[in-house]
Length: 137
Image (cartoon, rainbow, N blue to C red; front, top):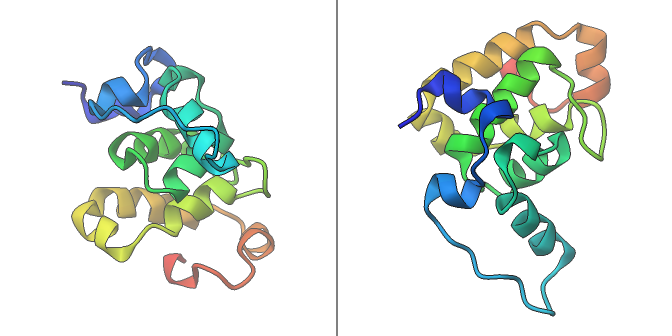
């Protein structure tokens, strides 16, 4: 079993999320949406190679949160406004948009996110979140 710090550092994680969670997904069929295909591709590639965009997508779909949120926190510690394919701060937005029930069970994650949000300049915050997530500031 990996420690929390080891889980956050995905650079050395050669396993896929599928291997880490032990939950196997069916290969998407021909009628699968682009979102389903992208999520499957990310879920079945080595965690060390996950991009910010893939983390954003997986967290937004609430996939393997014990792993993906930990990986995202490490990324956000380095760059609070890390950007996937949408806009600066979209990875943080995905994390802050998780249900309240998630944070009720993961209070340490909420504390880490509060520390990250506190370090963001107000002008950058306003630009990235435009009235959203005020309860995190």
